[in-house]
Length: 211
Image (cartoon, rainbow, N blue to C red; front, side, top):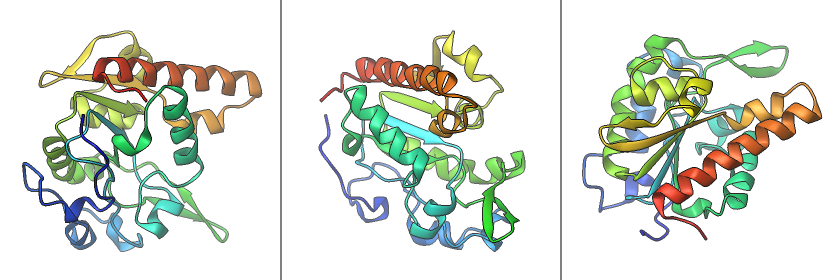
């Protein structure tokens, strides 16, 4: 399996296909999300990578730092990857949408689900990432990410009960770590956490990638 790669995907000379550089994402005007975002947020991780994890969009902390999954959901994701036997440094982690979609709530910037046209506008960047990473397994974190990967509508519940593929690559559907954090009570949080951990374990076995 590939070892740890550079944290900045735009700097790697070994990408097999043209890869979205940070400067390209910052300059992207395919939709209006850039107008209120701090910057574009590319994925991080080695290329190629056996496991590619795809979320919905950057959050507040990701928008400020320019790195994906660095907030509470990202920290939980890395915990669950570790529990599933996956070294997070060997996976490629990104989002389907590259700019933060938000709405003001007092002094806070709250997540706002991107419109379908915004997912469509970012699809070209995601396709380039998938082509460069060449994963054995794609993990879709949340329903929006699953739609972006499969290019058809499917719920996480339906996806978890199906053997999914995209152009011959296995796709694992699971809940976004933020769903665990938003669960209404401790019992549901524990249930969702176990589901995501188990799904990541399946991905690890399919990829032949454990610590």
